[in-house]
Image (tube, rainbow, N blue to C red; front, side, top):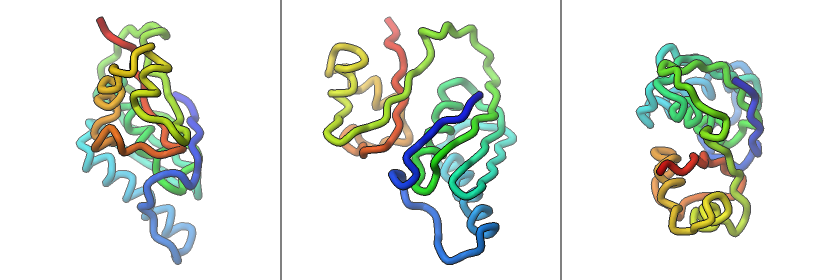
Length: 156
């Protein structure tokens, strides 16, 4: 559980304009729910509350990776500056802190290879990062500055 910060205007542009704040927030909430559903992320009792650029998310994710992906889908959306994660995980795993995913905010000039080199010491490990961020990423070359990515630990 926690609050994650994102660059408000760096994400995908999925929200409409010209509506009242309440209408906009309700529409944003529905669009975020649809995005999570369309990506086939397994979450039961998903609830999303939007208040301008702050979003609160509740529900039960099938596993820790799904929970992290939901937060990233929401946070990497244009107009979202913070996500309050109130989700739980169905598969309660004993996870050491060292085994948890890290998060990386993409900077201008970054590639998945460069990020893999930074975190793993080997640029050729970029597919690990790509797979960890699917289905949000459709291609390893389609990342943008301000986007936040999951960086899972390497598993032997």
